[in-house]
Length: 628
Image 1 (tube, rainbow, N blue to C red):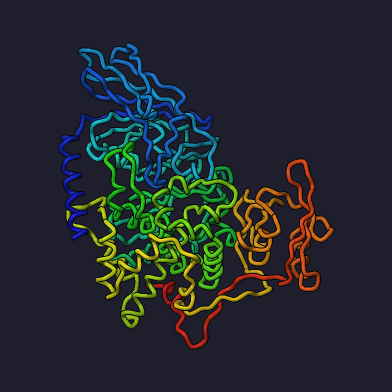
Image 2 (tube, rainbow, N blue to C red):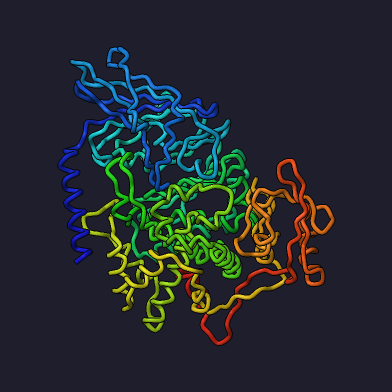
């Protein structure tokens, strides 16, 4: 009954919204001049049909893929509103809704012209996937940074026609369909505002395209741009792995919801690492050589494209109903992100291994690291997994200290572990005749009369899990998701056919991404409970020896056991702890130097997962290829 009432309420709400918004709105004519993108400036002109009277114009605030009000209205570098004959119309910002600009359209006017200048701030890991940025050779354009839209119509009902100018000789790639270029102007086929914003663009002097599935009716393209031509010359074996990823996804889901799909990839050491999902494309940022260097094409780099590709099904097509909003200023309710992002993290990592981008052995190392990091998160003792999703945009950039206490975006990694647990339960309840793959083919199947997005509720998840394997899924999920827990449920490891143990041999890890400093796992996370990056303590695990001894994030490590600090000397100190019974640190904190001695006698300790003899390798079965 609860599910019926929820669905009826949603239907009534959407019907009322549709009635209030009315029919399709008049078309917006948008011209974007990005010829100054290398100087971090973009200029937009928008012709908006309207009637005399008050008009509210919105700068996009709630940006899909970020799950929060992440639009940077503060990057507006100029705003001028005119009548057709060029007469300036004064505007005022709404004093509460700061993304909203209010104008009084004069009598007799049938349209206004908006001139918007956007400052393209330097990129960051979080920002680069949704903002516009460029340098002398390459650039990304996210249309949400270049538009104001009138309040009143749903984004799906607001048609836009778009023309674009790029720097001379630049090539581009986008899921939008373009017409013939004339005098440097690129016209795009008219689409809805929602489709427009969902189809970003990459451009540059050098751009290369690979078709990943030449025999499919729904083509998939890999577009690369970089300052370096060499960064675009992929080995055929790499192209084949991404082609296999597409085949593995089609085998997993059994259906596609896009007419075609475009991976938009910036290979640069100056744009940051990022990934943002869209229905027919994804915006991705990797290091310059991440796709041409076998060592760099591991870890996060291997996971990125499969993760964002899986989002075309999980998050873009099937989306929590409360995250389907009519425009870009209506807030989203994000408590089901443990499905949207947690399940997608599972899907992306499974596709990564099935495609051969990482070996099962390499993946076990990163999987163990996820287990360790989530085990060290004590914030679950007071805060549920669901709450990290409800407060998603607060969890996204919480701070630099003690994040294990407050939790961050745990709906990603802990959500992934939850879905691994669901997979093992399905296998156990069906004598290994079914798996989470069967749930996915059911849950992500096409929904009647829903071509581009199909909303779901919690009850839909429970229903499709129940149809896959008979189990009390509601009680299980309520217990795992909505309640705090004393510790991470580690019985999952045994269900996968493994057990945890400590070894004195460090795991083989992929190299760190450009600019991230030394690899964190060379430090003492599993022994003392600290992570040191570029000589400074970044993580102190609550309850472990470093925490009990008074070490804190931000302290700079100058020495260990009376010698200048280095990776090898830290390892020596940990090994010597068996006889010394402690590790001594010389620290710099502000203008003071301190010596802190950490009682510890366990030597080198690194967590690893090893097989349980006689038990099936369920993890191996989950990541095994479904295609050849």
